[in-house]
Image 1 (cartoon, rainbow, N blue to C red):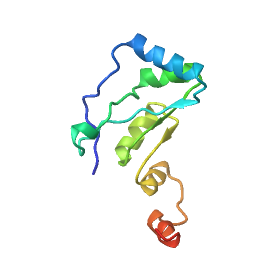
Image 2: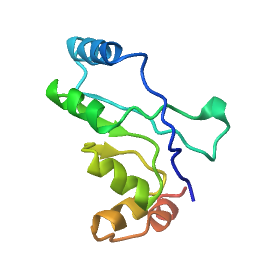
Image 3: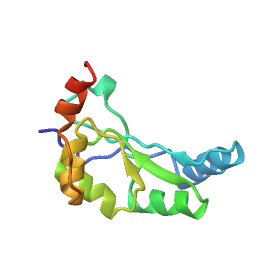
Image 4: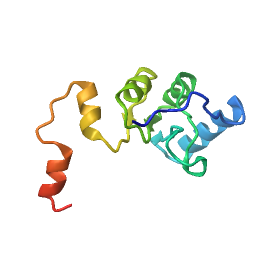
Length: 117
């Protein structure tokens, strides 16, 4: 089970993150995609947790969507949805749909098999 680390890395400063968001908006971005630090990966491949409530609010104030990646655990889905993110990238869409209480017509594995993967 993938879990998120409790010690997130932050941008250099509030001003630096605001400047990043302003630049993203000026360049026509519609959203930002912060990553979550994962304890099951080598540190070289883990990412910074840039989706705390304050950062989500600041992105939303600039009309930017926030989609986080990559989350695969129900408690992590709930934590980031509670923070106000707009979307989640996951390797386990069935688990995400289960967490959201949305019916799944076919299991992901069955769909992929039907498509020849």
